[in-house]
Length: 183
Image (tube, rainbow, N blue to C red; front, side):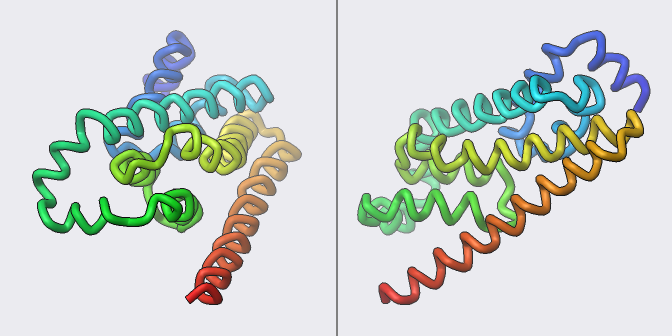
């Protein structure tokens, strides 16, 4: 672990690139964000850097799945792909929101799915930004504060994570309740 920490401290751009690239290959983002807090500290600028890297990840994975990867997936899925393609375009933002607020859906699945389904990148980013900012900041603050012994910032980071989880859970319940009423 100390070897990794030392490398990240000596190569902060490498850590930024790791956050921007590795989650696109199924690497969990949370440990990288905690590492960012440890290396960059529990500061607003560290949170902004980490969230920027996550948004960069969302952007390139969306581009890949909406562009070059889309034809490959269409060939693999065949007729099943046609059902997804025939989905009304008005439901795409709902699907993107549902993917972002459903617990347990990995970041790379969210990103690739929204791109494959044709959700416009700006809509995907608009939905992802507040969620990524809350979770990213919470993990960065908590990770940095734990290793520095800043109890107040640990509590703040955990509070942000808890508030994000509660808020997203409430939004999910409201969203699904509204969907049930429409049916």
